[in-house]
Length: 469
Image 1 (cartoon, helix red, strand yellow):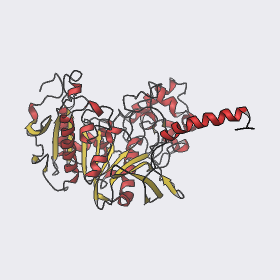
Image 2 (cartoon, helix red, strand yellow):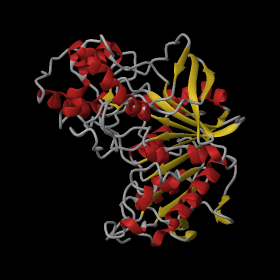
Image 3 (cartoon, helix red, strand yellow):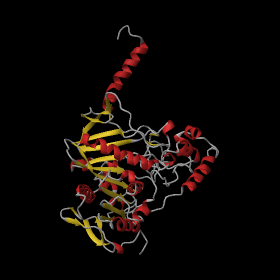
Image 4 (cartoon, one colour):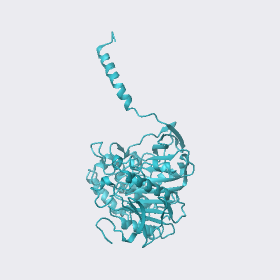
């Protein structure tokens, strides 16, 4: 280095010492795969024997003038769009420590531009059945990209998994007089549900590019995602976009909130951030998404509301009238949470129109959780078993034992068997010969226990811990 300035020598030496570390942190080269969808070409990756596409847009960003508007079509792009990394989750409150997840499992970046899918598919699939998954999170938390929802096990059994991000909180469930006056010809409120229908329409138009069959689509969700599925069954705009449904701990058999009440609640909550009752639509859209997420009174939104154009009837009313989309339903809860009574009612209402309803209760408590879950598996405990995603879930990993892993294969296999079940069937078989019979009032539910599945009288099962019939 004779004749080289001392400062430059220092930089060169630092660079030389850092180079191996930088190289060690670089990701492995992508084993790329490209598909063509209606908006352009997507490049995903081959991973663990399956194809994965992340950050796939199914609607335009619901930002600016399109906040609190129906989801708009994806604008075509030029060239090949990378789909190898997740886009940020929808705007929601997160911990200041970006390494700590919120109660919806999300940490780090989130954004209002968030209408994206994660797609996991078998390679060289043709006519594959499809699972469209709606995540939980109380309608204001969560993301479809979380590890518990990893679709690898499904893909290895011939099922394509499409996991959906939908708008959250006050950016999803919000009505206001100023917004109604500006676009009176459009559906108002229920934007998460409108997003969900848009995602299903995208699947109908594009899933063949991934080897999927648009006529064999099962919609599924847990907690709030189960509530999304419950409502999709009652929406005319969703009819024909799916042929089966799964609701895990999310039987949302509640009336909608009257629109006038929701508007009043929104106006009152906006006063807490200094927005007056006479605010214009443009002024409302000028408020940052993060401001809504940071407000205790606004962050959760104001629930589903009636809308003559999009949601004229609450799901519970449609079910009672026998007017819901009549498809096979798999529904249940976990022993350590409430809600089994609602799941049983759902199975009764959904199963009275011809298509069968299959009822379950998940009873397995992992050994490493025995001291915490003294009343049985809690809310969300079944997810890493339904997806066989123990190693991807923050709830599992190395702490899981052989019994957990064996049951995960069994439960996931049963979910896959339901997804593959012909829509006209009245029962299905899984778990090496277990025949899952449909629930009828006064009938049986499948108990999912450490040793496997068995049928048991459903009316004898309490609604939740410490409750009796």
